[in-house]
Image (tube, rainbow, N blue to C red; front, side):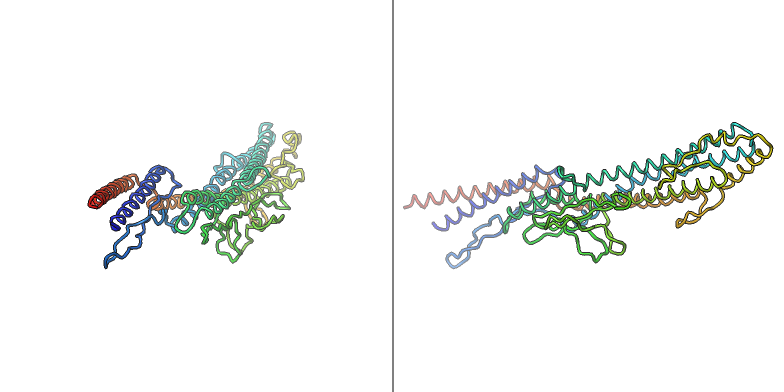
Length: 474
């Protein structure tokens, strides 16, 4: 009689176990199209056997836990690759705009206007009395100035756009959390929920899915590393490469750091980001953009923006150097340009008023002077001058050099976009092969569970019949 009761208990547990398996399979199928979901699997453990009439009799199984199908190694590589891809995509999209402002096709942009400027002086040399040629010089100078001014304002506008993107990603206006800080808070909050929800043998799988998705979203913006603590919470740090610098902790247990923007005190430009001590309300932060030799922060759209901003700053400096030297060299022969004495010659450079009228000729000597002057200025296009630390260039080669350097960086960023794009696709495929839901596999599991359930029900029915027989015998 006792053994029959044990049999009923085993069959009952089998029914309950199978219900959990069916529910888990149903949950998997419902999330088949959810890329953030990791397939779940029921893990059974054998119940302790009991001694009966000289032998050991099994007592069936119970649900030990429901685990996620994850490959932690692949997932960490995926997070790193997403970060690198995001940085390269952000950088290349902005560099393509910067490169366009220094187009070197000889027809458009500053280089095209510079070619027309030299040509106008050559034409004036050939016909120093021609009113059309004089007006041509004035118009060519005006076009060149407009191209320089336009490139400067376009670069400044692009820099301001980047500042706006940085503000939205990291800045905090006190009312709306920035993207980064909101994600840090979300991860810390889910750490707390997971720690409260889990106990030995019970994992909060759906919360872990959401947390990993937040980690991936965060890695698109900043480079991070993460590790799981014994209580199930994640510690998230900023990813320094080749550095002995102590890691900057962004999330620890249920506390999150806060990233904010730093401003260059001299230039007034947004150039880096900072992390505040997550354990206190400190008014000053810890700089997370390392000094040279202290390592490298690589990855994330935020770094792509900062790198693009540095390229823009360098381009503005070189454009100012170009405008300043152009005005100085040309004006040493004839007053054509004025820069207004501002710190940004590329922004302020203008053509002197009534340039064509100032070259009016009335005597043979003046005609000769205009002819010689025009020849000297025209020949200047082939003369190298010093651009300080940048080296010696002709004006045309200086523009080509700017375009070339930006092009090299653009090409490097494009190559990385292609490489990391392929790597992310490959790692996502590997991840899905482990964590993804296969409808075919789930249907097979469903059929298997159905058969187990039917068999357990049949055992209960048969045991009930045996018990009835025993009772009827009394």
